[in-house]
Every structure is written in structure tokens, then in C-alpha cells.
Amino acid sequence: MPSVTGRQIQVVSAKGAYLTTDTGARLFDGTASLWYANIGHGREEMAKVAYEQMKTLDSYHVFGRYTNDRAVALAETLVSMAPIDDAKVILNSGGSDSIDVALKLARRYWNQMGRTSKRVVISREHSYHGLHAYGTSVAGLDFNREGYGTDSLVDGTERVDKHSTTAFAEAIQRIGADNIAAYIAEPVMGTGGVHPPQEGYFAEIQRLCHENDILFIADEVITGFGRTGAMFASTRYALQPDIVTFAKGVTSGYAALGGIFVAPRVWRPFFERGAASPVYRHGTTYSGHPVTAALAIKNLDIIEREGLVERAAALERVLAGELAAIASHELVTATRVGGFLGAIELNDEVQAEWVTDQILDLGFITRPLRGNTVQISPPFITTDQEVRDLVNGVRHVLDDIRSGVVRASA
Image (cartoon, rainbow, N blue to C red):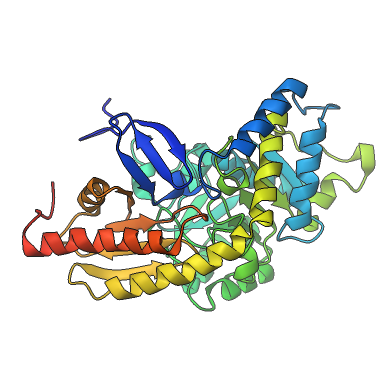
């Protein structure tokens, strides 16, 4: 089963915002790997934290009566910055885990409340929510659901137009509010093409959720921990979610970790009777791993200490200006910015995958997304000039294609 067509890039080292390949090429990480290398690569203080923690407590599970001091400290830190008041936090091993635990909890919550018919989860077309079974099922990217002999691996999923609140209202009417457990959305849609929310969209979505007793889940796996110029996109866009998923930026990729924040409405039924309360039976082997937790604590300290959330907000303004300038290019149909997340959508004369390949030859990593779109989302330590150089690299490739110096597709 071939996984790569064309050339394969083998990365052997990384420092700051740059990668080095096995051929010696130095590449600017214009996507922060898969949206996560927020503090940059190769920080020695992160390596030291991992080393010291491994010497002290390398690992132990947090099932049943067991825990560890790093997991507890991380949970306390996360709750202090959560976009939900009086939140509880559940830790796991990554973004796809976070989606699964959130959607399972939504179903479990309604069962606990005696409303067992509330099982359907509504998501948006072109959305991405990881690739575990539940995330694959709610994904709005059709190609991720193909080949399994069914439209959804998990029953009870529906997708609606990504910009239409009317479509959501109609789905509620058609399915019935008594059958809908939750609505899940990325505050800024990522893999589906970097789509920030349209004015008033989430206000109306939240009104419909509130009026119809539907849990609202904000998928902040990409946007959490500063990517939108606020610690969480839920804060920036005035969201009041019942559950928030997170991963990626919580460790900036130095270790695999994810989790969810849970609002009091959802967690109280599992705590209010003390030892007699029902148990939500979910956990992963490496949940609360002490080394991972220690790295997350240090990562969050770096983000705060170096003002990287504010830096991301400043970089958004630089990126927005550069993308506004390239928006008039003949081969560009649209540009979008949602925090320090950018997209250049191309017309059908060119292929985004081919364009990103040509940009790579100039020393810049970008990524093709759905909708013939080029993704830009560098680390928060990026300089203003590096943003300009990256967008100029895209412009240079598009100019060469337009002038015939480079062909438009593979």
C-alpha cells in the first residue's frame, strides 16, 4: 500500500522554526508540523525536563486510586486557564483520543440523565475531528469516511453545511431535538481549508443548542493554547461550550498529549453523590503520563513567560497583510486568516499539492488542504520577516506558473 507519491522528505533534526533533512536541506516549518510546534523545535529546557522527570518517575498509570504529582499539577494548571468556568479535565494521549472521549461522554451524559434517545452527533461538512472511529464518523471530509462499507463507522452522525445555521436548524427539525446529543465544531476549521467563523454564526448555533438542549462541543485540538491569538478560540469567538477538546499545542508536540475540558452541567451528575456517583468508564494507558505532563507544564510556562499568545496575535496581523497583498494574484481565488492560521485558495488552473511541492524547493514547508488550498501556520517564534519571506515564496511560485517558467501541475 503506497503511502507517498513522489519524493519523500526525511527529517533528521530541527531547531527553532527550521528543519534539516537527510540531504542537508534546511526548511522553514511553515505549518508548525501538523499545526502543533508552537514554541518551536529543539528547546533544550524541554529536553532537560523530560530527562529529569524520567529519572524521578518515568511512568505510571492513573487508573483507579493511582495518580502522580505531574498529572495533578498539569490538571490544576489547565483548569486555571480553561475557557470554561469550574471545569474538570480529562487527560489522554492525543487529539483523536480527545474527540472520542468527548463524544462518548456526551452520549453517556444523556443516558445518565435518563434521555436515552439523545444519541445523534451533528458536525459540519469539511470538518476534521481526528481518525479514530468516532472522529472518522463525524468528519465532514468524505474521503476520510470512504472504503469502510458504510458512511459512518459509528451510527448516529449527521453533517450540515459549514456556514449555514439554517441547515443546522433544519437538521434539528428533521431529526428531532430529543434524538440529538451534541453539535461539534472547530472554532476555526483547519484541515477543511482554514475557515474562520462568519459573523454571528456561532451565536446562532449556540442559541439553537441552548433552546433544543443539545451539548455544544468545541474542537480546539488545533486552535487551543494560542493559535488564534487568544489562549483558546472559544474565548476569542465568545463561545460557551459544554466540552472543549485539546491536544497539539498543549505540549507543542514535544510529547503526545490531549484532553477535554468539561463544564459543570456535564460533570456534576458523575460527582454529586460522592462515592455513590456513576462512573464514566474511559481511560487510556498513557493518560496522565508523568513525563508528558511535565513537558506540558514546561511548554505552557514558556508560552506564558515569552508572551507567545500575544506574539501569535501580532503575527496574525502580519500574515493578514501579506495574504491581502497576494489575494489579487490571477491564480488566487481567496485568502483566509483565523488567528495565526492562513490559507491561500487557488483556482482550478493549478493544483495546491503541486504548488506546495514547488514552494518546498525554495526552502518553505506548506501543506495542501481540501479545496485546492495552501496552508500557512508557522510556530509562534516566527519573525515578521519569515512570514513575509514565506508568502513571497508562494507568490514567486505562482508568478513562475503564470509566466510559464514552471508548469501548473505534476
